[in-house]
Image 1 (cartoon, one colour):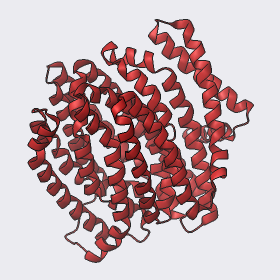
Image 2 (image 1 turned 90 degrees about the horizontal axis):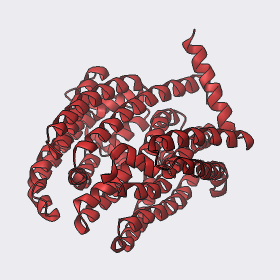
Image 3 (image 1 turned 60 degrees about the vertical axis):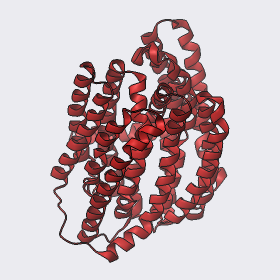
Image 4 (image 1 turned 90 degrees about the vertical axis):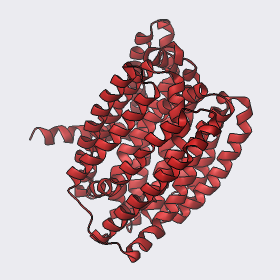
Length: 484
């Protein structure tokens, strides 16, 4: 990677991290506060709707955002065409959701879901108006403006949610928090992007973008259905409280991996797209960010799994205790998330959204089979099924990624296994250390995290993991640049 691209990547990752950690961190704290004020069943009601909202959102984007970023010779006509299509399709899907609201409520046997669906569904239209603005900022690797928009929106909407929850609005506090967040974020993205669509729509532009984006649409649809299918089947077979427990465990487990990988890959994707024709540089970039993602995510997931019980008791109180065991299991599933994302992304960089789709079809056939095999045995077994699925996921995506990047199975495994084994060792030390502080939740979390960090770094130094030196060098360079 050239020095200019390296500098651009570091700067982009910095602001991407600011946005993710500040926004998601604040959102995390606000969620904990609201969770203390509402019932698990209130969260369960929103979780039951996730599959319908998420499917609609996939169609609204239609893969066009990635298509715009991947295309080198994009024009203003391309941007305007995508904007008008997204706006139209978002309105269409909201109307479908509005009409379907009573049937969704009947399916779950939850009458309150009908008005909730119609209100929270407005989020589809609101977010549909900001997809192009966000894509333009991403293309320019401008995450500073995205950070400002997201941070402002989450702070104001969080205050609204807390006030409503405190006054006893229950599920409606969650609804209006979500809507206000989306509305504010969209308005600010329009202001910061300084872009308005032209009065033009090109069929040719639509055709070119859709030929790439349509495969991502279908892939995203399969993945979205699968991710949200758990809330649907748990809600149908068990109860809204069980959905609330599973949903909380999923959010805690996915929080570290999705956000950290998102920070890195949303910056690296547009940069890798610029080098998509240079296979040697692309392979070097692929291995580098695969290792870096696993270096950061693996130990975090193991530590969260080890500290799940004091974490849940301290943050959410005893009424959420069943979440702890589910969280520990799901951490072992979502620790592999960076491996899948980096491999999936390289297919998009090379323009092989067809491979992306083939892999997704095969993976989801296996995933849904595992889901329905484990369903009769309870939510605990469902979570272990997700762990099993993730290993199938890796095998399949390795097969397709090596077709475009020439990185074999064993080469990827050799690059990620050291982080896995060091993380397991770290988790064992953390588990033993917190046994001396039973009954002291804050002490268990504090000591566990500190020992986990120190032990992991120590093991990395002993086994000469190069990523430690790379991060230290980057920090030094950033410090030198900031003090100039």
